[in-house]
Length: 237
Image (cartoon, rainbow, N blue to C red; front, side):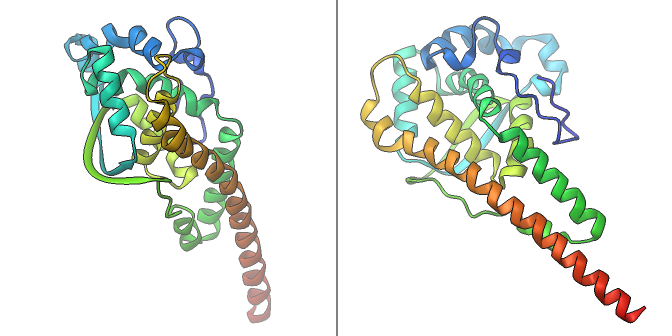
């Protein structure tokens, strides 16, 4: 992945960068597990991985989850005969590829960071802080303490997308897991997918479109405030 972790503007929209064979977005959840199972099983034992912080395992914690997600993940673990930690590490690759394939997400990121730079240049931290909190919640929520395993480079990548979206990494990861479950080729979990998980994916896509509206308003507010200050400075000067 060619994402500059210190500059959120450089987001690599290239799902193929993560695939060792085939396109990750065309694979089912079970195919993803088959593709990455051996690699993720050996991750903690690999010397090169231990020496590269970006390749090390990490944990994302949750106080609440989308309704039905944990049940579907546990069912997938039984079918694939793997642990939940191994499952979520495998699916992490598809999650990142999915986010980087979403239309207009790169444009949204560039718009956010351009606006943020303008707010910084003109001295409006209050406007910038207001763009970082959208009070987003899952469509259907189950209160449950939980944690899922992933990889540092994926968490870092989600963080760079989380800021423009005004969402915590935990929400992005959870909805990404919902999307991966939706791709199941087993024919199972269909009731949960149709009633709950697909709704989470739809809500996030809707949020992305609505986020553009807020960012354009953010730009306009900065412009208007700067114009007012300029007029006032002329009067007092």
